Length: 414
Image (tube, rainbow, N blue to C red):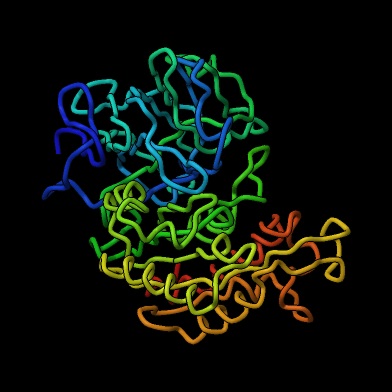
């Protein structure tokens, strides 16, 4: 492959990249490292820049999950709008450089160029970056985004300013050593990708499993922390260093929202860069919260969602749905919690999910890991801080369940 692979909405030409199709020899690749860009916030000011910035430079650290002789970086131009994928009104221009923890920066190129313009809704994969890194090594990325006056930049996860190497500055093209260590919402590579079946002595393209996670804010890691940064979560805790994965969870997402043609188009464009061997479907909380959806209607939504994922050729495992509660004591006890209006429907749907209905291959009982054994409609004491999201303890409990299940899902021992 000599140039960037592009997909999504927009026009393809020498300046703006967006539309395109996948051709022979252009992948798939394996996810190699994390954390990466994830649209973790649902609204202003943290999902988009405010229109006053014309540039942004973000520095992130990524931990390599396996040995790599080189890699590619994926980037995209869309954002989270209230739990829905949305295109900004303008293109963005992206440039990037990477280095090892103490190495020299290497420029990331796109069809030989040092920058690329990505149309609204578009995504792109860079040329191969010739930087070899072993499993467990730190990859440092510096990504600059530029836009015109009054235009906006999609924002993703927070940098971990406590580590002394990550940060965001509100200008483009800032050298790495001039970006201050701070905690702010930035723009990171959306994926770090490597050649399938290469590294760690693997025997070929089928040697390793790859997971795809489709969740909401709990899947995105809300309530957990990575140093000074928010949004670590059970996915990262369970998968990192064990099995490669692409997390396309979207804070605020609903099952209902995935069912329209536009509902997952941008996320699935990213997923098309890899070839997942299994999918974890972890939606449902936002559909049931507040009541109004019957158990039967929710089951219909879930089956339609699972079938759409299964139609892509991967086996699908579903998660049961965790509780939603209010509290009169700050969630410091089980007795002080009051179940949300949709609790009966949640119990009905979870009981049905546990029967492993078609087209599922398996079930991960997330709810059982975090709900009270005495009162299943509420959270275990100390597992949530707001009644909707797992806290670090809750995420760790779910991660332990998922990590124990991964060998079965992957057909191998991580």
